[in-house]
Amino acid sequence: MERGKYIIIDGIEAIGKEGLKRRICEYLNSKKAILILREPGGTQLGEMERALLKEPVKAYTALRDRFLETPGYAFGREADSEELLSRDPWAEVFEYLTSRASSATKIVLPAIERGNWVVTDRAWTSTFAYQGFGRFNGDKEALKLIAANHKMILRNIFPGDRIYVIDITVEESFRRMKADQVGRTSTDFFDNEKTEFFERVRNGYRALKKRYPKQVRVIDGMRTPEEIFADIQNDLTQLLDD
Image (cartoon, rainbow, N blue to C red; front, side):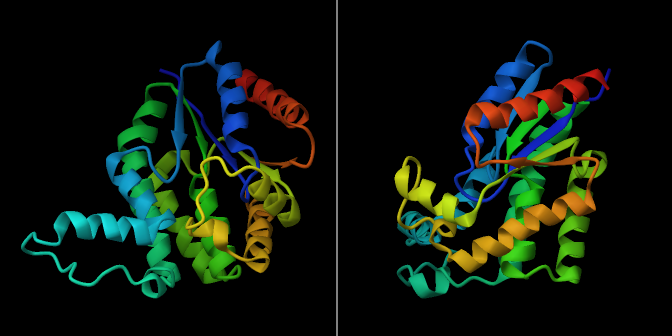
């Protein structure tokens, strides 16, 4: 059986990932069996990690309510926002690795072996940019470890068949987040980061092109959704013909 493909859509906040994923899937669906994924998440363990990563205060509070009286757990203290919102960068990396290992083993790798094309918004590339550059400011050893761990998890599909980086300015990202609050909360961990953090993250996504020129396509995201998808569709057509 022909191996499937691993397609990643990524970039900083508010790049229009959901809309692009939907268009890509509609285009591919008539040609290939596809599987849609969102990261972190996809499995029950992944969804738990998603809650811990994005809403640590709410997640801790929910766990405390459930396990406060259960022997073997120490949830005596109420949620400490200062502690929960100042987590160690490596702790953050390994939380993402936990979610990603679960989705790779249970969803992504089996699907690709069956010949499915997996289309995901966010993937290991997000950890490379958000943690590797956002947290570690492009430290070479940190980037090396992040890539090595993901290569071990994703095995022969690393780094992906196509990585579409939708590139917009940080100013435009903030404008879109302010204009469209659907699915966002005031307590979302990453939505509350500062401009400097997202500038580093954007640089991280651009750095992917230098490391993986064959797989990465940097798409100008400052245009209309129709123009952005046209570029992706043209590239996918070539991938289908390979």
